[in-house]
Amino acid sequence: MENLSEQLSSLEFCMFLISGATSCLFSTLLATRESPSIFPHTLWLLDKKERLFTASIDSSNSATLDGSTVASEAALAVSTLPADLSLWHRRFTHHNYADVKRMVQHKLVTGLVLDSDNKPDPICEPCIAGKMSANPFPSSANHNRSPLALIHSDLHGPLPIATHQGYKYWITFIDNSTCFRAVYLLKNKSQAFEVFKEYKAWAENQLSAKILELQDDKGGEYMSKKFLQFTAQHGIQRRHSTRNRP
Ligand SMILES: [Zn+2]
Image 1: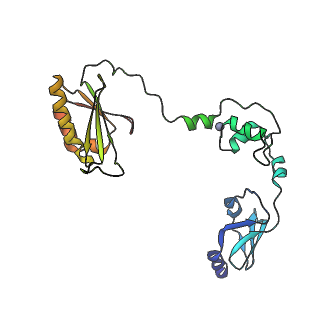
Image 2: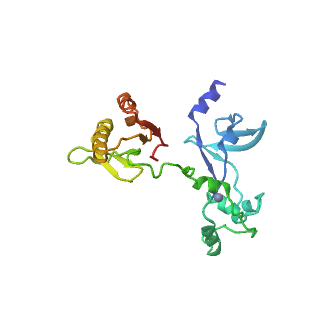
Image 3: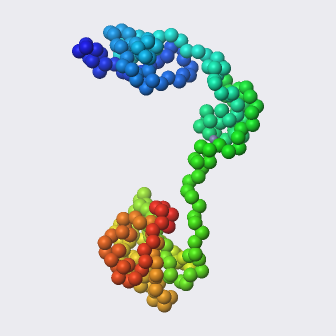
């Protein structure tokens, strides 16, 4: 047993090379789920105590599966599903149907043959799920409110290179009613609070109106104790959107 564990530590399990294989599907997990038996020059991969494969261990501690692989055309023939457009679409990680058809028509891929002209289901769930980046915005009653009733704010950056004056971030304040945008440059994120106060003073003075609500993405720069305290003291309601979508 001691001898066996010594062998285990020195073996490179990932190095399964199949002689003559042009393509192969080999599950290391499946092959090693039951402890393989290891001898000085051979490795046995077991399935329910039956010997499934043997591999020869060479002087560089690489194990090469003994035997040969089935040619890829023959392997395709044993597919349990018809090799139609839908199957190839999935095999090509859901590549678009038009391109897959073109690959077949122009024989761009060796071994890619359609043995069924089944029309693919126009609804491919993984494709739809993959392309759905976010739920649609819910319709809201935010429009047509008076100026400064709702301000959306977002902080961007850092820039890969700071400006000459050392600014790396920028913060926007967008009035929901007028879409007027104010932009301030920041040297660091913690300046968000100071510039909000500056924007508030300027905007409220210019428009003779008060900011009623502030919407942000709940980033740390908006959630400091002093920021929260300030907005609470000035009766500004806080709203938070999903990150990166102010
Ligand atoms: Zn798909």
